[in-house]
Every structure is written in C-alpha cells, then in structure tokens.
Image (cartoon, rainbow, N blue to C red; front, side, top):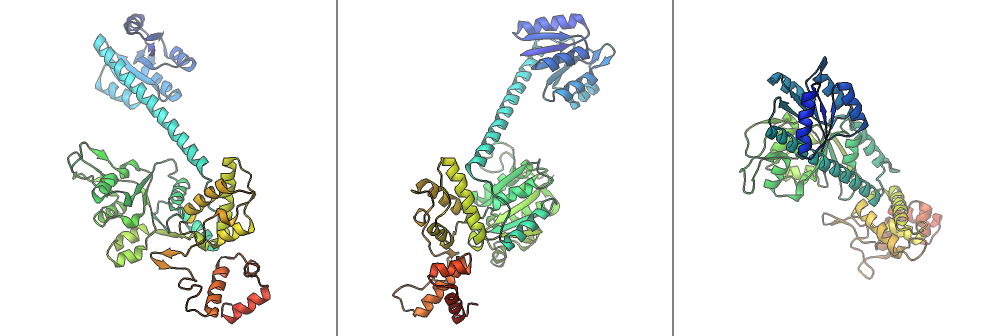
Length: 458
C-alpha cells in the first residue's frame, strides 16, 4: 500500500516508516496538516496515519479537511492521548480506525490487514457500480425507451393523474393487462418523485411460495424455517426511504396480506422468527392484471388492503384500444430495431399497416415489440409487409372471446346480413378513419354511410 504518516514528532514518523517499509509498503511523511493536505491533493494514498495532536493543530480538524476532499480516504488516528471520547468522536467524523501510541508491531499489522480488506471492498463496490451502469446502458440500448405521451384521450388522462401524484408519498395502484408496461410506469413514477435518489426495489408476488415470499418481503431470523441458516433482511428493509414495487399484487397469498396492510397502515413489520417490531419508511406502488374487486368478492383479496393500496389508482388501457398509439409505437420500435441491425426499412406498407391494426395484440406492448423486432429481421423489402407480421387471431380475455366475429364462420348457419354486419363492426373498430374503412371494404364513403345506417351503427 501507499501510506502517508502525519505526525509532528520526527521520531514517530521515522520509527513508523521503518516498520511499514519492512512490511513492503511505500511510505511518505508530513509534519503538519497543510503538508499532508497538499500531498493528498497531488497523490493518491491507500492509508493515512494521522496524529490527533499536530503541535497547535487539532488532528480532528485535519481529519475533516481530508475527508471533505476525499470522502473515501482511509484515515487511522493514532495518539498518545487515547480516550474513549476522542476515539468515538474520531470514528463519528469518519476515521477508519484508531491506534494508541505506543503500539506493538502486531497492532500495526492488524490495522494494515483491516485496511487491505477495506480497500478490496472499495474496489469490489466500484466494480459493481460500474457493472450496474453498464447493465443500465445495455438495457437502454436493447429497447427504445417508453415515452409517456399518448394520442388517446383516456390514456393521456390516466398518465396525467399518475404523474401528478408522483411527487407525493401516496400509495399507487396500477391496473392493466399483462404487457402494458406497468413495471416501467412504476419506475417512472419513482423517477418523477422526491425519492428518485433512493432505492427502487421490486418484488414479484407470483414468483415464490408463500413462505419464501414472506421472507423475501420482510426478512427472517436464523432457524425460523428449514434452510434459514443466517439472519436476513428483506426487500422492505432494502427499500428503506425509497419505493417498494409489488408486481402482480393480485397474486399475493391471503396469509401475507394482513402483514402488508400493517406495513401500509402502521409503517411497521416483523421479520420471520423475530418478535421485535421494526419501523419502515417506504412508498408502496403495486400493479396487477387482475380484477381486484372481483377477487374481493371471491375472498381472494382483502377489502381493507385494496382501499389502502387504492389511494391513487390508474388503469393502463390495452394496446388494441389505442389505435393511434399502436401505430406510433410500431414506428418507434421499427426505427430502433432497423437502426440496431443496420437495415434501411422505410416504415410499413399498406398491407403491413392493415395487419398491424387488425391484430388484437393480446400481449400488448411486449408482444408488439417482439413482433416488430422479428419483422425487422425477416423483412425482404424496404417496407414491412403483412406477411412479416403476426396473423390476426380472435382475442380471448379470461377465456371469453371479445372478437365481434366470434362464432360466425363461412358456410355456417348465419345470414349474409349477420356476417356483413360483423365484418363492418370489426373493420370500423380498427380502421383509423371512415375513409380508410371504406377503402378496405372496397366501397365509397356514401355506401359505407348507408350500410352503417342500415345496421343501426351510426
């Protein structure tokens, strides 16, 4: 290690230097605070030994100046005037350790070994921080960012409500089908809040058994269950001061729901196997694709927990209900993936655009992203054609068909009027305009108007 000794006694500087150099370390010395601060500004030292009394200078003042310029600097205080009060004060101010003079070679080696471990930890932390930044960069470059703007009035209103509440500490409940971007939206709420610099911790409620989920949430004590070989803190502790995001809260086991309610109401919790009540300061954001009101009626979700979570509630509309946003998202995904692959693809052909609008997108944004990435890879020409995209299929939600043509088939026992009306309904649902619908149907707008009037569709 590179070590700096700061002491006004020449004999201490000399003897300590010899002891450290005999252990293979590089050593420099300084007799006062100004010299030490100058050398620390010019060079990096792994460890500083600092005397508490430097002539007329107070070593604690020098300590604060060192840590102000280099917050991660390891500084060991040594002095012949040891006392509990000075030791405590030095460590409170940020000193790494405390060594009383005169000290033995073994005591000095113990400090050096402790410093080596601390430096290794700093290196590992730095490496982990760099890895996290690299991973964040990879995530940003693996998919285009989700922009929280919409051409759909309902979606725009939901986002407006959500982000106005972001600056508060209120609990937020995000509802919507799978793939609508609820987890991304939850993180955006965190980023727009006063907690943006605090932790954002996610718990996936369906991913674990009841016992493990409770441990993951609240932590456990050694021996509290089979396999609990040491005390462990949970995600609530990890999120302290920040945001706890509970993904798919509708899957939370009934046995854990009272404990979550206590966390929300009383700001208290207990680790598994521990009787000590602990306080918590976390903001809770929850998301689910379930109908929680229905779950309450079936006894699968507590009503009081629902109202605690439902302080601010928004529903993210399905992609099929946002045709204008669908086209915008598709164009953004296409520009991103074609650029990533070095391909020049100039949007969608008429057939490609029609296929986009006809597909019900049950997987929402997640499905659209995958479909556009696949199309960008397989497209033969300069535009995305219908054949490059998924074929339209009847949409089912919870086993119930929402397709207006469901149950109607060519050659079945259906009148021509029934089939024509169903087809008109389907086209009018997804076509951007009446002119587009008329073009797709192969008729003019006047004929379309008459057919709509005939079937009572005005």
